[in-house]
Length: 150
Image 1 (tube, helix red, strand yellow):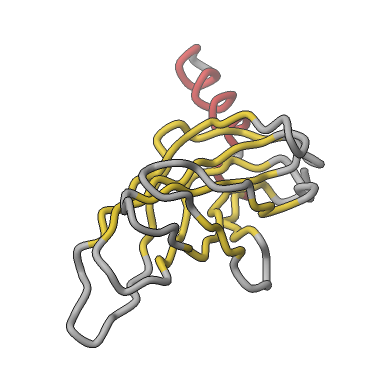
Image 2 (cartoon, rainbow, N blue to C red):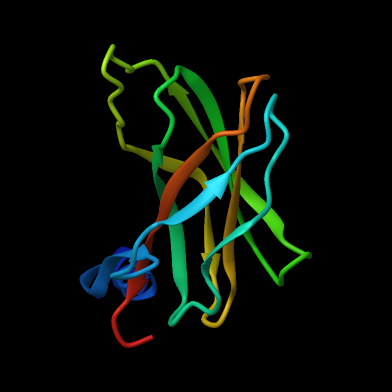
């Protein structure tokens, strides 16, 4: 067996590509509601999961702004205990798709700083919106990858 072949097998065993599955957090539940402070002041953290069931790579966020006005949002993904959250990435939504009757659009935003979180880690997030006049809300879920049998 060549060295290249051995390295390739070790790499494939390490990343476990054959047993990764995508998950949505919270699983089989309504999305959480995040309320942003106006003029890019962040609102309070909302909890996606009090304790992840398995080691998970957090790779994206699904979000639906609930207002019908054009606005921009920043959603922060964080982990850690309540009141001690550590932000690991930020997703940006530029809301420009509003029609005269008010259409709510959902967005899937990949996270560039994908983070691996250990089992039992708390996953949280918060939002800020650009509008100076009022705080706005979004509903959100996180997207992750985990491995079967961890």
